[in-house]
Image 1 (cartoon, rainbow over the protein chains, first blue to last red):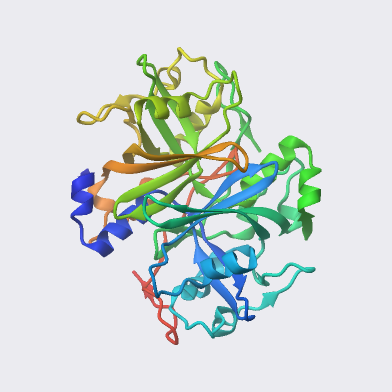
Image 2: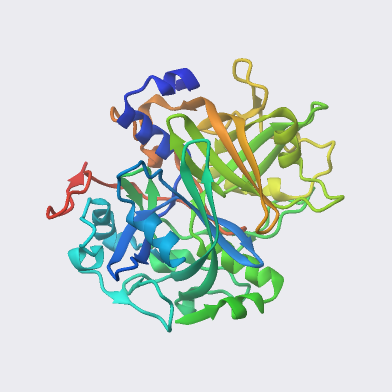
Length: 213
Length: 213
C-alpha cells in the first residue's frame, strides 16, 4: 500500500498531484456541458464534477475551475451571462470525441463544429443540447457561489428539461443506465464502461440485503 | 423518448421523482463515510454525492441531506462536532454489505458492528476507516456551507491521508481503478461494476484523439 499525507500530496509535482486527486475522489459520469455565449457561439466542455443536490425542486450542482485574471473560461462565462446550460450524458462508444472537447479551441470556434457533434435545440431552451447524447438535461442557474477555499465556482442549476429513452425508465422512476452505455470518467484521461447493475431493496435493520431484479 | 419539464418533474410522486433525479444526474462511485460521535460511537453511511474540488490544496466536497428539526443525521452531526471524516471506496464484490448501511440503525449502534465491517484506525486520525476498502481517504473539515436553495449542506474536506494499493498507481499519478473493482452507484438502489478504462492523451486542437495504453 502507498500512504500519502497532506504534506506528501502537496510535495508531488503539479501534474501528478492533479491526476492523483482527480482519481482518488472517485469515478463520475462523463457529461458534456453545452452553452452559448452572448454573441451566439456555442460551446461544449467535458465535466465530471456533477452531483445531485435535490429532487424537490430538482437541482444539480457542479464545480467550475478558477478563472484567473485574463484567462478564458467559456463554460463559466456563458453560464453566468446567459443563466442556462445543458448536461449531456456521454456514451462509451463515442468517448474519444467527447474527450477531444478538452482541447483549447479559441473563443470563436464551436466545439460542436470542430468535433462534428450536432447541436439540438429543444423547444425554446436557450442552450444547445448534444443530439447524439441519450440523456439530456437543461438547467437554469439557481445559485452561483464562488468557493473562497480555492477560487472554484459552485454552480447549482434547476432542471427545466430532462429527456431520456422511454425504455430505460422503470416504473419507480429509476433509470437502467446500462441501457445507454454510459462513460464513467476517472480523473482527466480515463473512461470506463459499466456492467449491468445489481439492485437492492430499501435497507432495513436486522434484515439481510434483498436483491431486486 | 420521454421528456420532462420542471412542472412535470414536480408533479411526480415523491419517491419516483427522487429516483429519477438521483439517476439522471449521473453515476458516481459508492463511498462509505466513516465518522465517530463525540461520545465515541462510530458510524458508517453510504454516499455517492462526492466530487473533486481541488488538488492544491487537496480538497473533496460532498452534499449532506437537510436535517429537519428533531431528526438524526449521524454523519453530518459527527462531522460538525469532530471536524473529520473518512471516505472509503466500496468494491462491487461487497456492495450488498455497503448498501445495508442505509438502514436506519439507532444512534447507539455502530454500522461497523451491525454489518461486520472492521474498523481501521490509521496513525492518530480521529475517524474510523473501513479495513476492507482498497482506497481510503481521511479528511478534515475546511468549509461547511448550508445551501439555502434547499437546506442541504456542502461539506468541503482537506485530504490529510490517502491510502491505496501501490500497484494501481501509475507513474503519472493516475489510478487504475479497475484494479480495485469499484462500485459505481446509480441513484439509491443500483450499483454497477466497471470495465477496464480507455485512456487518452491531453487533447489538442486539430489533432485526433490519441489513445494511451
